[in-house]
Image 1 (cartoon, helix red, strand yellow):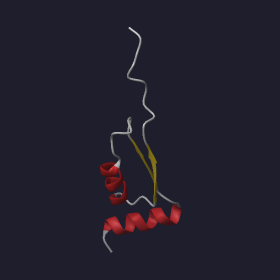
Image 2 (cartoon, helix red, strand yellow):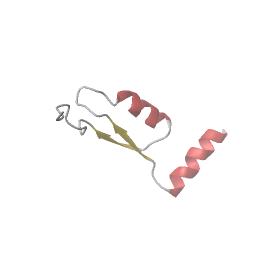
Image 3 (cartoon, helix red, strand yellow):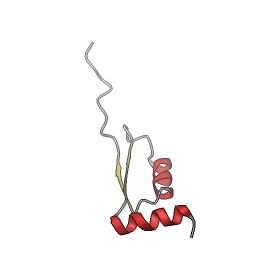
Length: 59
């Protein structure tokens, strides 16, 4: 068993690993973040889109 596999196994015994992927606009994608989070061993990924501020700001 490699060190990486042992680390993942010990984390699973302690609890679940949950990732969080977020982008500011609906036009952006979280796909790259999700790939990295899965590679890090996340069991579940919470995904959030388009919660950024308004582009129309007062002068």
